[in-house]
Image 1 (cartoon, rainbow over the protein chains, first blue to last red):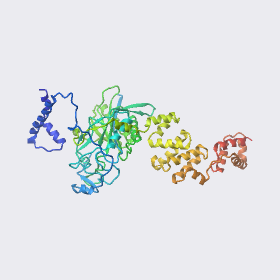
Image 2: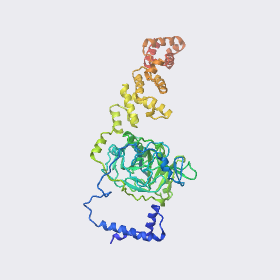
Image 3: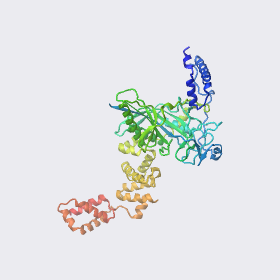
Image 4: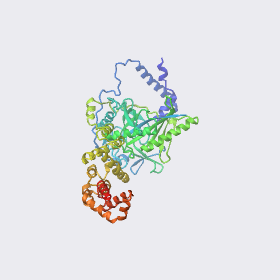
Length: 101
Length: 478
């Protein structure tokens, strides 16, 4: 099967995806994830076999369309409440470790 | 080797809505940090984004103004990356089904040539917050007021061939978004931001060279400088046998240089996928037609009309249509003053603009509005005052609330056109300067200017210069 090669997820792909998502994973479980992700891709490849030429592509499982909101400001300032749960704030700013560009 | 420069621009225009794109927080600029960031903007769990109708309308308006395709079926996607000013860990944007598709913008270049620049697309997305690095000890401060402000990201084809062309295109887009009132265009406040994709290739080569993306350019002047610097940098690299690296570079205006912003191995992989929180958006024909009705006369059409109907030169028509406010001001002055368009234009672009420049003001903050200004131009037009006196009148109007007529009345500046009154002043001057009269009569024609000056002085600048010249020459002959 030609799909085989496309659905094969290697350890380095798992590590890369984990890095992009900023997820820490055990080195022991990397190959587990690799085979699980391969399984998911194989499922997708299998579904790819179905003839969908007469089916509209969809981005959402329901056929509803987005309701729009009027452009009106209804929110008031609730900074104090929000900042109560922040680890560190100063002069109204949320503080994070220094970001150097 | 001859190198060809290739530039494409990505322009982020903040849409001038009252509330944010997915929440009902205010988008007002300049508020205290984090006072305009609600639970949706902060990315709290369990919140649901709801799309702002006005943001959609504004994007469609832009498509209509640039004859671009309108994406009837819109999908919002998540663009995933981590940065402290992006609390959700993703930006809601549009990927494969944007609201604005292919379009074309005509750009007038300095030499009068009109260049067509292709629009690839424009899509709706939310702005991120702001990081402040300077004010905190060993920490970065995050202000999320800007998070969720609606943006229209306008992407051009790589059609520009010089920094000047890129600036002309950016100015054109700037003019369009302000004309159709979807963006205030304030570059200092970040309402209108340009990123430039710059590459070079040997002249005649069809393939594109490796590009770098320049960010952080907040004026047209810096855009031109940043691109020119980048082109030189890439030429130096290629001519010394090196390779241009695809990367994001930051323009540093103080040093007038670009520098690498993110290292290559961190090349972003945004893993876009449709946002499950937002349903697809359908743009119905009805909506498009209702927006089409609100479109004002666009700069190109207005410029052409100023040239054909008002007989302005191409240059003047360009200046008078550079933004909508100027064009409205100019048209109001022409209409109210009854003066020629040429006269109105020269007073606006000359005396009015120079005073605004001096005071660092935009036209919409001018101390003299179109109403008051048109009376001044009218008084020049009907010869009540000379151009020279009009400048004095304008100075008085600038610092006070009087109309031109009130100033002219109070200061007694009405032009003297009554020939008997002027003749009397001429007689006095001739009587007081017998030596000069003799010299003039013996052929020293240049002395005429001296007599004109003397009579003008006697009239305190109020004598009608045409009348004065005529009468003086007659008198001196006799």
